[in-house]
Length: 256
Ligand SMILES: [Zn+2]
Image 1 (spheres, helix red, strand yellow):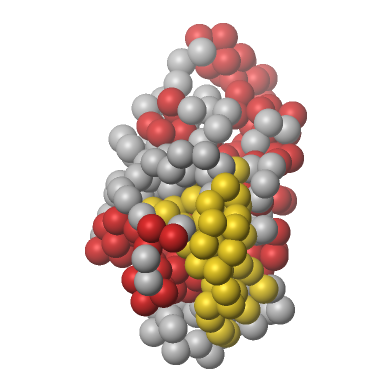
Image 2 (image 1 turned 135 degrees about the horizontal axis):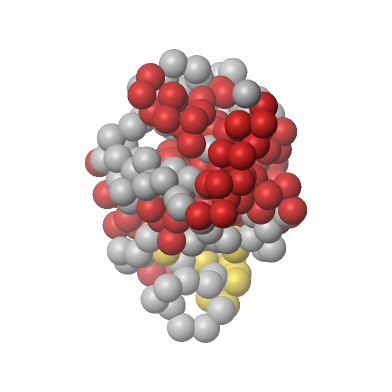
């Protein structure tokens, strides 16, 4: 039996055949609820603390630095304090807060260690998909995209995905352990991860793994079965590197 399995693995490895991704797009373009808005958020307070110059990279803003940025400070029940920088194009505190608040709540639902490793969050107006800066440990997110994700219940998934880039990609996305797991599995969970094995596979797979480990039973049985069959090596790596502990309760009125 053992010899047969080894032979099978070598046969599969030799063919380079990959199973079709479980999901045709990315983690936000399916109906699965990985993280729920009813899950507790650790956000304890959120307030504008000033206007200042900040490094504000973005998809539609020229130059790296911007003046007059709205600086919001969020504190979390685990002790993390995080700044949310909203571009001056938001024009008013009230308008900026409409985007900052739900993102700050979603950050409050992240595992504590991921939240503590985030450096800050950059918020822009406009309609672009979020992206992250792995070495700088921050992500950028856009007003209209946040509104869209709120409507489709995908904001928490987006924030989780970008936070994986910002807090776990370095050093894990290119680590030997992860690359070896990718080779062993011979399958990928989403087409987005399949198209970008170096940049997106960890962030895409991490959300499935996190939900599977943190809230067993939340993913549909067929997804759990398929996942454990398709990417067992990745799950093993993620079991070691994914922080699972979240805040028990935020006590924040912002997030309800
Ligand atoms: Zn990504």
